[in-house]
Length: 378
Image (cartoon, rainbow, N blue to C red; front, side, top):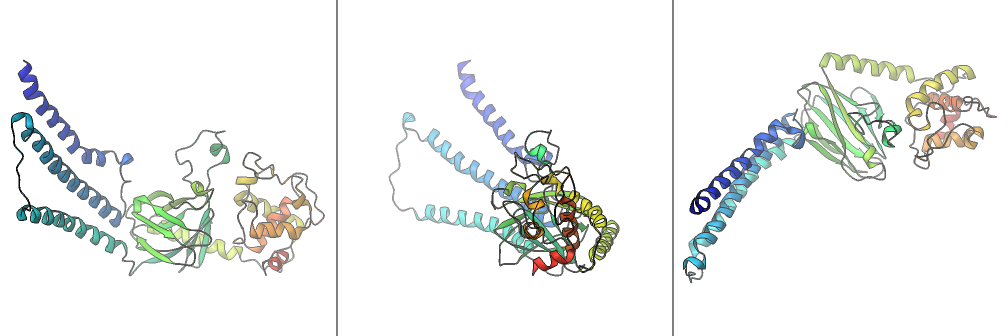
C-alpha cells in the first residue's frame, strides 16, 4: 500500500496539475473579465492571438526546462549512487544551448513584428480625428468636418465621495464620448496641451502617449457597434484617475445623423459676439450652459461642494464683484477649475450673467455682454 502511494499518486497529481495548467488559455477565452477585453478591431485580435501564442511558447519552455531539471535531480542524485561526470567544454552542448534560444526568439519576434508594423500603418484612413489631452479632460477635433468638443468625467461627486451607490460605469463615463462609424479606418492624431497623457482603449488594442509639442498617430477600425471604455494610462496629476476615454461606435447611418446634428449645433453657436443681449435672454441661455458644463461641480443650486473644495457661487465675492475677474477665472481657470475658453463668447457671457443673477445673487454688474468676454481673450 505504501509502495502504491509513492509510485502512483505523484504521477496522477502531476497529470492533473498539467491538465489544469493547459486549460488556463481556454478559461481565459471563456472569461475575458480577467484577461484582455474582447477585441473589436483587427489589431486588437492580432494582439490577443499573439498573447496566446507567446503564452504557449512560455509553457513549452517552462515544461522543458523544469522537466530536465527535475529529471536530473531525481535520476542523478547521490543517494542512488550516481557519480558526477567530469568534462570541460562540450562543443555540441554549447551549440545547442545557443541555437535553441535563437530559434525561440525568431519564432516570437516574427509575429510580434508583423503586429507592430500593422499597428503603425496609419495610411489611407477613412477619417482623421485629433485628440488632445488636458488636465483632466480630452478634446476631440473632427478635422474634416470642422467641429469638436471636450469630453470630461460624468460620474457624480456623490459616488466619488461614497455618498451614493456606484453604478456599473463608475469613473468610466463622460459627458461627450468620441463618436465614430463602424467599419471605418479612423486615424487618430494624439497630442497634449500641458503634461504627458496616454489615450488608451483596450478593446481597440490602442494605447498612445500624448506628449506636449509632439503629434503622434495611431488607428483603429471597429467592426462592432457599441460603447467602449478606456482611461488615461499615464500618471498626469492629482485627477489622473478621473480622465476616462469613452468611444461610441455607431452604424454609418446613425453616425451621419449625429454628425449633421453636431454641424447644426456648431452653426447655431456661432453668434455675433457684438450683439447686445437683454439680461433676461442671457440668464435663460446661461442656465442651460451652466447646467450642461458647471453644475457637475458647483451644483445646480450653486452651493458648491465643500468636501471637494469646490466653492459655492451663492454670495461668492468673485461672482458679486467686478465682472472682469470672473471672466478671467472662467477663461483661464484657477485653483483646480479648468479653463472654459473653448466655449463660445456668448455661452460664457450667458453663464456668468446667470450666476450673477441667480440663487439670490444681485451683482452690481449683473449683465455681461459677449463683447466683454471677447475683449478678455485678447
